[in-house]
Image (cartoon, rainbow, N blue to C red; front, side):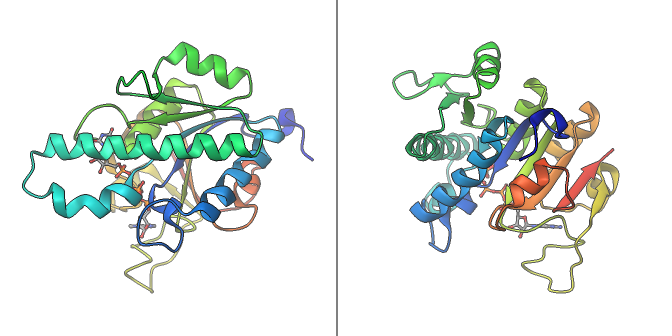
Length: 241
Ligand SMILES: Nc1ncnc2c1ncn2[C@@H]1O[C@H](COP(=O)(O)OP(=O)(O)OP(=O)(O)O)[C@@H](O)[C@H]1O
Ligand SMILES: O=c1ccn([C@@H]2O[C@H](COP(=O)(O)O)[C@@H](O)[C@H]2O)c(=O)[nH]1
């Protein structure tokens, strides 16, 4: 197994799509799926890689989109952030069930449920080899968890942001809607923003471009994909300066 010192990335920020947690279900958290995802992350933790996770909320929040109609946008967004906290708690339990120490930090204060985000404490956990799961996105409405992932990845001095999702990279168009779409092996931030590639939101792309943090987009359901990414192998799409 590769020594952490020989790996290109020693500290990573994994943005985990909420929708990925649904597996084949229509909404919510599929038990087998979440266990498969945490097992992939455990493999790289065992290699000595420090892992921070930002979790999305689409698996819970999109199911409620109908009820959010007519609401103030900010209220609906707070509901979305609460959905990510539920996912964060589920992830922590899943990690601990396989012997991986994990901590949840929430961008919104809810002290009975989770620690409030503190950069120094989060850094300490990473150095101790614990997985840190960031819930509640940025804590602000009108943002997304992609932007939260870019922000936390930069704050935590991560070597790269890994967007673990249900598609295996960035395509010329949404591959779920356009079967002719072709996958990029690499793409620049400028091109991704100019072509409005919707795999991530433009705010997240712009923040990473400004702070020079590369992004790798890859499919979390491909066996061993995360390990290959961490070992610097050709997997998914690299978005770079
Ligand atoms: N050009 C593109 N290349 C790849 N995927 C694309 C592209 N355009 C749109 N997509 C879509 O982007 C989605 C990937 O984003 P993801 O599912 O992680 O969404 P998210 O909103 O960040 O997640 P969630 O809200 O569930 O946490 C895929 O489902 C894919 O269909
Ligand atoms: O910083 C943030 C992050 C998220 N939200 C709201 O939560 C939902 C779910 O997040 P996804 O990134 O779509 O998984 C999002 O749609 C926003 O409504 C937020 O307001 N601020």
